[in-house]
Length: 188
Image 1 (cartoon, rainbow, N blue to C red):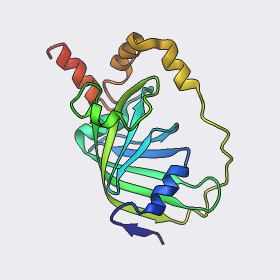
Image 2: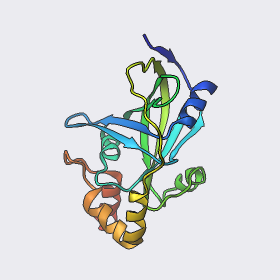
Image 3: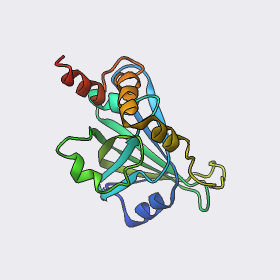
Image 4: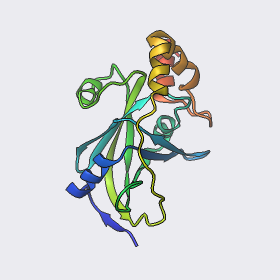
């Protein structure tokens, strides 16, 4: 049986810092539930009850869209090496876009990798650990550079066009904050 906490403890923070990957789960009121793997050094603990991650441009933008309808989200970290453990953070999330008032305050916490598109911030209301006994052991070989190289090769102008085409609306037709910003630029 797992153990619940009201906030992150120092040992939870140490565990999170040692992981090379985490997962984000979100859902709107209707439609698909989304689970996204995240790599690279993009996760930050801002306080025992506040976390954020730098979200990089990808083929979809489901988490961002879901947060427009319902702010529920879950983060999951799991030990793929060493002592088994699964750690989940349950909280409320929101999107911070580049150029917004809060962006400069948050962006200083991150290495702004090529292709960054937004920061997802969460207020954490519950932390839960479980055994992780069935999670297999894997060896970390390094980060994949495919996404970084893709973003560099695209360049800023083509990334904006890509986000407009691929990141403005979710697979269930929900407008994302990026889509909303594009519509505001067009006066819609």
